[in-house]
Amino acid sequence: MRVSLAVRPRKKPTIPIEAETITPASFLEGAEIQVWRGNRELPLDEVFAVTIEGAADRPEDVEIVLSGDTSRMKRVGEYMDAGRIVIDGDIGMHCGNFMSGGVIEIGGNADGWLGREMQGGTIICRGNAADYCAAGYRGGRKGMTGGTVEIFGNAGDFAAENLAGGTVIIHGNAGDMAGVELHDGTLIIKGDCRRPCGNMSGGVCVIYGIAYDMLPTFRKMGTEIRDGREFLSFTGDIANRGKGNLIVKDCTYQD
Image (tube, rainbow, N blue to C red; front, side, top):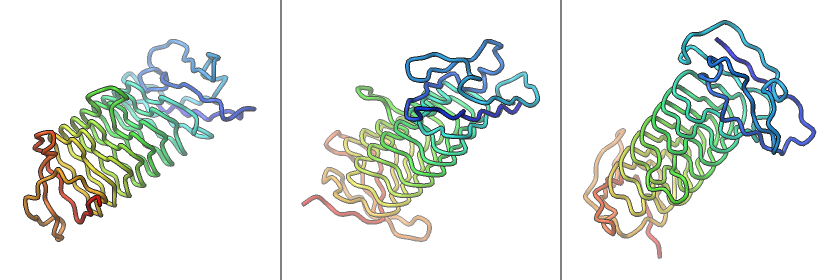
């Protein structure tokens, strides 16, 4: 089954659309799907031009394609456990919240909290991701626990905060405090970042660029070769009695 959802033109395009009902499983349940636009709950076909081709018995066999101005659309793919969602352009906050399976592919940029507390599946973002990508929510102690998030652009601050499992790959630069409170899992940053992995207790973080203002509470263990290049290897954060592995191509320390 292929479900095409094209956002209808709106008089006030800045009003957000709460779209946690847009998951592959929703289109197999038979109930009328509704979304919130601002403070109004509306039928799906009042907000989108809907086209459905083919049929499916399992969410694994459903693909949803979102097009039009989706930049203010929140919570797409929340609790998604199978199937595929393809977003042609940008997407709003909380895309893939608590996702446990399936694939979400974003052609543009993603707003904050992409893959929040994700448990499994795959998220691919072809553009940039804003703050708190693959992180836990404020006040929580556990972030992403499984699956893969891959960002082909840059990521904002606090990427992979409280990471407890799975893999996060950022092909560009990350902002401040990437991997803070990292417990387990793997964070790979192909570019630069600032103050990574504060209070890290476990897991692995590999930075192919420069870690600026690196915290002094990491113990240098030596060097290692990755992809034919020499990297510096650290353990820590020893301020938290941590035993994480922080591997960087180069770093600077705070003055």
